[in-house]
Image 1 (tube, helix red, strand yellow):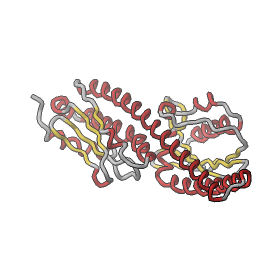
Image 2 (tube, rainbow, N blue to C red; image 1 turned 180 degrees about the vertical axis):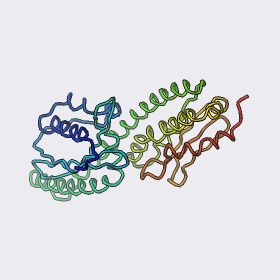
Image 3 (tube, rainbow, N blue to C red; image 1 turned 90 degrees about the vertical axis):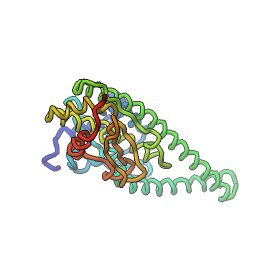
Length: 303
């Protein structure tokens, strides 16, 4: 194990596997998840069945710990590796399903989907053969039935993802209101967030839309909040200009990564970030702190 990785991060992974695989206990398992993971519905207790797991070497990437866990189905022998993501929350190590999902979508997801797709294809072929033998029908008829089942399953998965995205949108709106209250304490004026929700959920791939919403909290709502409050602590003049000039924070999602932008327009600070894939479509807090003083300096005072 890499020395820089805190032991508590790995221990919470072991404990989580203990109460999800070894001796299932849903209440204990949920107690090891972050508040955001529980609110977003990112955890579903696995169905009971023979399974084993192997914990790999923990790694530290950009300040985030990842602990790879390879799960093996005891009946089929199929394996899949999940990068569990421990984080400190309220002084305790918890698992963040959103960060795990982000890591998967960053590259490993494609490989996992391919592996699972291959395994599912083989399984469905076996189902088709069994139906043919049992019903005395042709393999073509069985194949059509299998295809219909597969399409129905895919539709159910899309529906589940869309429901999760809708719930996450509600959570983000509540989080934004909390940030608005904190901004008011710093600047003395209410500065609401406004979102172009349709653009964040405009992709044909529901999974990409869910990814965008998952990252919006950290790289949109919190990023501009931290940049603004950080600058206010360092510069009283900047704090005064925000109070005199800014009344809205607008968050938008562009069509492509090259269209990210931060700018000011009348009384609005606008942030356009691309979150559906990759990590080049958003600004770091430090990048925002460098850009915002010049943007706010050119905005007019509110009369």
